[in-house]
Amino acid sequence: MTGSKEKQQVLLASQSSLLSKSIEKLLEHHYDMIVVEDAESAWKTLAENRQIVLVMSELAVVIEPFALIERIRQASDERLAATPLILLHGEKDTREHRQKAFQQGASDFVALPTTREELIDRVELQIQLFSGNPALIAADNEASAAGALKKLAQVSFFDSRVDQELAFSQRHRSNLSICHLKIDGIKSLAEQHGKDALQGFVKGLINIILQSLRTEDLLCYLGNAEFHILYPATNGIGAMTAVKRILERIAASHINVSGKQMQTTLSASLYSCVAGQQTSLENIYQQLSEDLQQAVAAGGNQVVSSFDSSGPQTFSIDRVLKLIDQDNADDVDEHMVALLLQALPLFEYGDAVLDLELLDTLAELRKRLKKQTNSPA
Image (cartoon, rainbow, N blue to C red):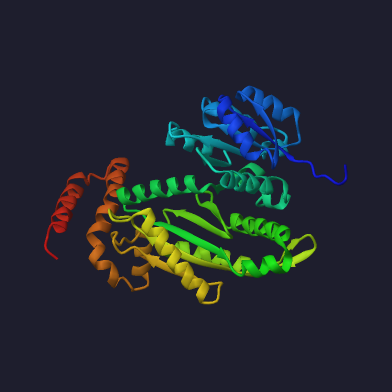
């Protein structure tokens, strides 16, 4: 038995025998597949078999009321609670259901139909996170294993989240930032340390990145040593600070992989905008890619940033107050009408709560501000 390596066990839950056979065919040479037909059987099998390292399920199997996801994530057994769960979704599955499943604790999504390469890549990544390094799974002392796994999004889900944030940004004139990261010198690292050590090293880098994110931020591993990070409701200044913090932490870190001390840097591009009608996901990614090439060409450990000038330039109230306090508010003047209109709901609410009898005054102020927006520049 010493000459052979046992395949890792993957549990597949599917109501479709055709889909089960298809997934089995794609994965059978890499994993020992266990197939069940419903959520209850999946839970029973998972609870009894501690050799299972990943659960894969049709979205339909766990859609109502997401019992399988909830039971896994709320299990008292920490290892069981951290088991990665990849959901398979088709064209008939709604975005709302995918979002709900992710919020409940799904680790990743794979759109059907899929390829062997994509499926194996996603499965391998989740299994590595689950079983390769306990320090990675618990991103910090307070983060659960399930929480760390939930933060890694699949590309298709990440893109859908960005689309939602762009729509929100356009409606509410809020900021949005996206970062593209690339590991510097990945080829030389592979040649020097080998593929297996490199995989462990990438996992260590992911751990550091995850520790640097807020709850609302979203990390996506693109493969080929590259990542995307979504910073919702974050302007360029805030996002730049966050990205530089990641680069500094990576550059200062020595990651131990099988007794080897490995170290590298990251190159980064950053795109910030207040979305307008012409803002598109394709254009953002293209700009990020171009800027990332500049960062790499500059020698690595650099950030190149861009701002979408097609969207309306805005200033937050907090930022304006700081600029006024610093006697540096000249650039704010042309945005004063928009700022006052932005602040009016707060005064109107305060008037209602405190009974200040300012209703007529605020209505007149709103009327005058509206006229200003229609006045020639």
